[in-house]
Length: 97
Image (spheres, one colour):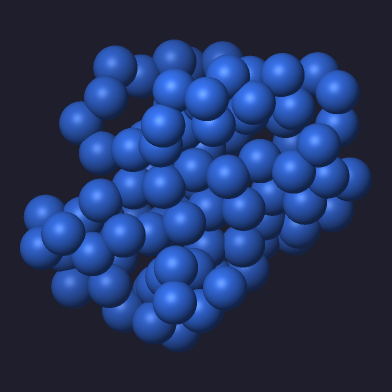
């Protein structure tokens, strides 16, 4: 999660949902949920392939689903998914998808 920060939000995340497992993982590392959300809405997509990064950049303007992936210090992955209509953003572990 150590990426240069863009400070301007690119989209509205809608309703925020966090699974209990994702909340526990973040809390165990002292990472506030809001910091993950801010990375996501500012276009810092985390640890995803370049093709997915380009797709997210395009999806911001075309209204498609957005996916970010962040690696915690213990190598646990956290996904952040915003639905195409921007109604909901969910923070979860990949195996909860």
